[in-house]
Every structure is written in C-alpha cells, then in structure tokens.
Image (cartoon, rainbow, N blue to C red; front, side, top):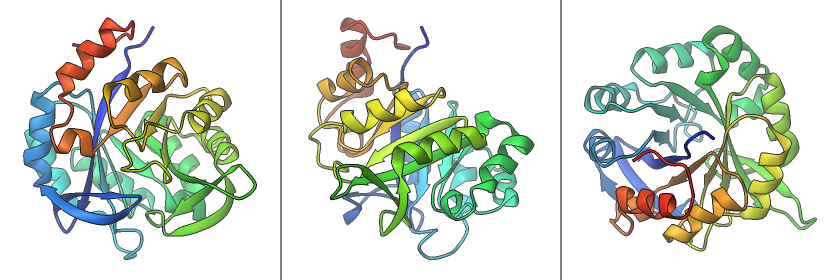
Length: 252
C-alpha cells in the first residue's frame, strides 16, 4: 500500500500567502518561501502553491516566488494559477516545481492536458477541480478561482481529464472550503471510484478526524489543507502520528 500524503496548500496573492473562506474574506498569512521551508522541515510530504488571482486577472503565474521556494525546500511541490500554454509548464518546471496544476485553462482548452502529458509526462500534470453542488444534486465545475460556473459535471470532467493524460486529480469542494467541517466525502468517493490516478482531497479540514475520514471513507491518496496548518491548529507530525495510530500508511 502506498503511503498517504499530507499536503499543505499555500494560496499566493501579490507574492504573499493568503487564506479565505469559500474563496472570499482573504487574509494575509506569510511569505511563500519562509512558510514553505517551515512545512518542509515539519514533515510535509508535498506542497501546493496556487497563484489564486492569476487566471481571473488573465496573467501568468509569478515565477519569482516559485524560484525562491525551490531554493528553500527539499520536498516535491506543484504550482498552479494562470497556466495556459506548454511554455507555462516549461517555465514553471524549470523554475524548480515538480508538477503543474491546471484548472481554468484545462476547461477552456482540454487538449492542453494531452499535450502537456505527452511533452513532460503525466506525473507533471495535475488537474485541479473546483466543484460546487448544484440544484440537481450533482457537482458543477467552477473556474477562475471559483468565480465562474461551467456546464461541466465534476465526476465526468475528472474522468475525461485522466483520459487526456492528467496524472493526478485535486478535488476541492467550494462548499466546504475554509469551513473546517470536513471534506466532501460524497464527492470524493465518486471521483476516486471514477479514475485510476491519485486523488487529492481539498477543502474543509478542521480536525485530525477529517483527514482520517478522507482516507478511510473516500480512499484519498493525499490530504490537502491550508488554514489548520497555517494558523497552527494542527501540527503535521501530530497529524501523521494520529493517522498512523489509526491504521493509515504514512511517512513519519
């Protein structure tokens, strides 16, 4: 059995790590490189950085913070936000990132997933899905940092993304983002059952039990969180020990 991964998520705006609730009420947290090093030293398995306003502002990912992070940490990390071309993949990977996360651009141009996978390998291509439950009881895909609803169904989009070459799926429930009530296990279970690549749970962690639930009940390969780590509510090594004591294969 592969070890499950604990992944702090760092949303970056104007060169600073920030955190909000349901993609709103944004608060300043810290410097990306400094916080990234702290997590690397604290036992995180990977990191995810999102330049959260790049797509909405129709600009490219800021490579400056990516290079600084790469100099400070010794664990894998992925970067997303404003990625729309193969050159964007190239520059982010050359700046030191191990993976590139795409969301809005993949919806607008699904062929980008295929082209990036063929050129850089599917292990470098992460499809990030922001989903929100709709009136029909299914989940709609949102783009531009949760600002714009699409006609795509989240489960079908995850399946299509993997067919095109995505090597990993990050599932973020907008309804649960920053709420600390737990991950959306129903959505997670449907996506882990639909694809054969690693699925990362995102949006809603508030206590160690929520991380355990994502593994035990939804078979998440990685568990991503932000505010509980940023504000010191959960320490990564304490969380890992808790998961290990509850039968989860984890790196300590």
